[in-house]
Image (cartoon, rainbow, N blue to C red; front, side, top):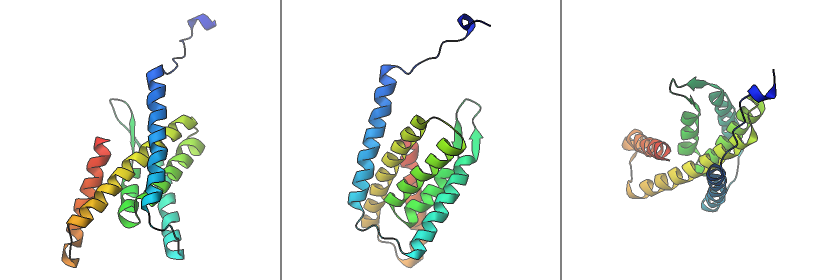
Length: 166
């Protein structure tokens, strides 16, 4: 078989590269902004064990891939990252999403590193925006102990809405 019959490799066009690097750049800025918003990043033993548990759970959730008939795929990692966001905060959600996606995509699934960079930037943008929205809602809606489940539903809906829009 000659090389003339092989399909040509399509390289990403200029706009795709601009989109890729702009998402990655805004994601890095979002990550730094999330570090700035977090008052103190301290781990005690309980938080560290929870965080490691959520990272491992996120790696397994990233590997649970559901193919969409139209094309593309979905993973179950959003539910894990949503839990981390609501329990520990935006910076922890971003870090667990980046570590989980990096390990599962690059090392286990052996996909190109550019996919990991793009997904990491997108996770940073999404979860910083969601964290800002959640903090904003917590200032205006003061929930009593009886309303805790209702408040978690509102916050989860807000994060899911932002995730779907972005």
